[in-house]
Length: 270
Figure 1 (cartoon, rainbow, N blue to C red):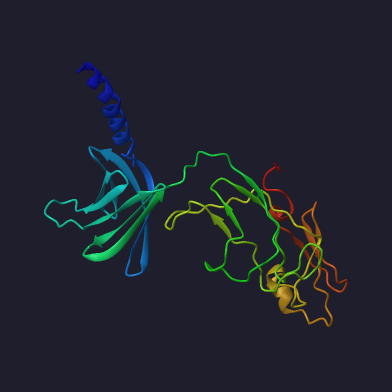
Figure 2 (figure 1 turned 30 degrees about the vertical axis):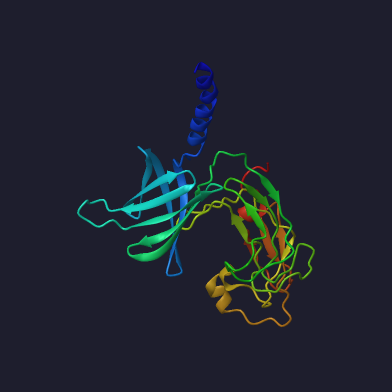
C-alpha cells in the first residue's frame, strides 16, 4: 500500500504542474484590431486580472477574457446591468496573439490582439542609403526600413528636382521623398513624434528651376518693379558657416539669410 502511494505521487504532481502551465497570464497592454463588414477598428486595451478572468475597458465597454489553456473567450459587456451585453467571440491564443471570431452588437466580427511593444529597450541607430524616391505619400508603398520607437535614422535626401549631392538626377522632380519608414508597434490613433536631431546641407548650391527668384525671398514692392531678365541664372551660393545664401547671377544682387537649422546641427552630433 505504501509502495502504491509513493508511485502515484509523482504523477499527481506532474499533472498539477502541467495544468498550471496551461493557464496564460493575459495581464498588460494589448493592441486590438476588430474587423466587421470588412472595416478595421483599432484600439488599445489594458487587461488586469479579475478572479478567473482578465478585464479592461475599450470603446466605453467592459472587455472580459476567460482562458482555458490556449482557448479564449472574449466577452463584451455593458456597463449598466440593464443594458444588453454587446457580444461574445471565441478563439485561441497562439504565439502571444489572441484571435477570435463571433458577434459584436449582433454583427459578425473578428478579433485580433497582440502585446503592445515595451519601450524599455536599447535604441538602435540605422544607417540608410536611399536608392529609390517617391513623389507621393501612400500606404501601398513597401517600407524601406523597419524601426522601433526610440531609434535614430541617419539618411540623405535629394532636392525638389530630384538632384543628389553630386549634382546627378536620380529621381523625378516634384519634391521626391526618402522612405517610407515603418515604425513597429505604432498603432492608429496614437501620436507619432519625429525629432530632427541634426539637419545639414549636402552641397554648397541651390537652384530654382523656374529660372527666377521666389517672390517670398524679396520685398514685395521691390519684386513688383523689377523687369524680367533674359537667361537668368537662378543658382544660389550657400555659405554654410555664415548662413548666407546669395544669387550668383551678377546682374541681380539678392542676399538671404538661410535658416540656421538647415546649415548647422540642431544638437551636437552623437
